[in-house]
Length: 332
Ligand SMILES: NC(=O)c1ccc[n+]([C@@H]2O[C@H](COP(=O)([O-])OP(=O)(O)OC[C@H]3O[C@@H](n4cnc5c(N)ncnc54)[C@H](OP(=O)(O)O)[C@@H]3O)[C@@H](O)[C@H]2O)c1
Image (tube, rainbow, N blue to C red; front, side, top):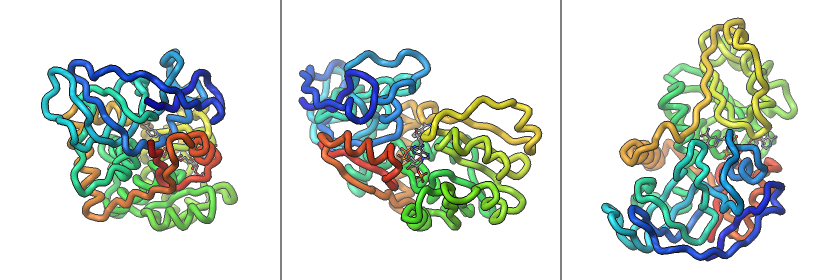
């Protein structure tokens, strides 16, 4: 069974094709044949090293936290799943989802982390949207839910998570200002929820946001981190919500908590999707909400590219070099 694994941390060149022997699924486990695997920025963080608060898993590490596929067989004591069913998952355990292993043709997983796929959601859509959509879900459902009339600032609005968040906020009636790294991404972001875009590599995004929202924005949603988060405090109106959910440019540098008071009594959130939908019931409910948003046309899942799993290094390079828009999937 072919996997894409790492035996050391490093650049995309450390990704290796490694064959492993997959045992029969154990009690409570289901064997899945993957048909589409989601690429997430966290895969790059794990590959580079330094992602986990502790030591992280031991090498070799099969990367990946998200995939869709078909149930091949079920272990003892599994109820509710049978061979041939279409399923998907995002994250399979550990505080930071240390239990990776999606970059593989097949995998055994606890049945408790699977979601059944409805017929109108394709495998590629599921692999492209589950983890990123659940991240948007924790933000919108637990941190700050925009209301009609609100203006929000979303950094990297053409990214996988950013483009889902922007559409969801628009659907809730908010005006979305999105920062983007290129003109091409500005066009993509405008087609995926943004009323305004700011080319933040060319223009001061604080001044541009203040021009668009002179009173300040109600919320900042930021997956970029180091290059944007603390500066964004100056975009916020009093009592706004600041949500940092990722560090694509590096970790947010330490800052004095008093800054939040000085900048207008701002609220700070650092969510992770794993605390939001971490039981079969809450996960199924959160996924069904996402599927409904796709069904009603509120969410369009932009799939920028589908790479053969064997070309995962190429996909990593594209994502790390900021060349992708929306989601990227790997096909085993
Ligand atoms: N908290 C959670 O549970 C959770 C879950 C999923 C993802 N995340 C985080 O959310 C963020 C977005 O994830 P994603 O999968 O949607 O990523 P993605 O589609 O690969 O997008 C990342 C984007 O970040 C922007 N960026 C800014 N500075 C960058 C830099 N120095 N290097 C690379 N990219 C940079 C780029 O957009 P521009 O070119 O427009 O600047 C890039 O395309 C990541 O930080 C990820 O770790 C968090």
